[in-house]
Image 1 (cartoon, rainbow, N blue to C red):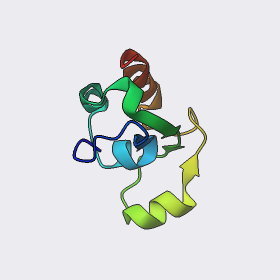
Image 2 (cartoon, rainbow, N blue to C red; image 1 turned 90 degrees about the vertical axis):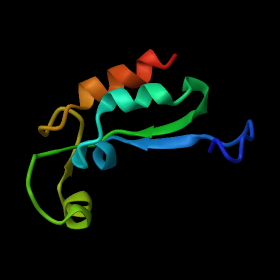
Image 3 (cartoon, rainbow, N blue to C red; image 1 turned 180 degrees about the vertical axis):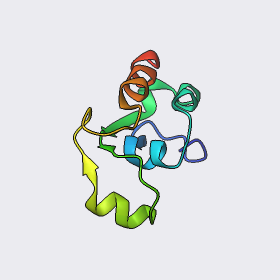
Length: 80
């Protein structure tokens, strides 16, 4: 996104893919808020299994799993 530096190019954030990999929500602060184009929110139970299988078969609505989705959303809101 930075390399392209185009006003119509943004980033898509996916809570499941970030949180299931242990990426800290605070890392969202490095993204300018106006570059966040889309947010996909999903929760999941904290199971140890193949990430692709977990992603495709065990996603939940926010609040129905054990991932810190509320903290993730709070960091997005803080970007402005």
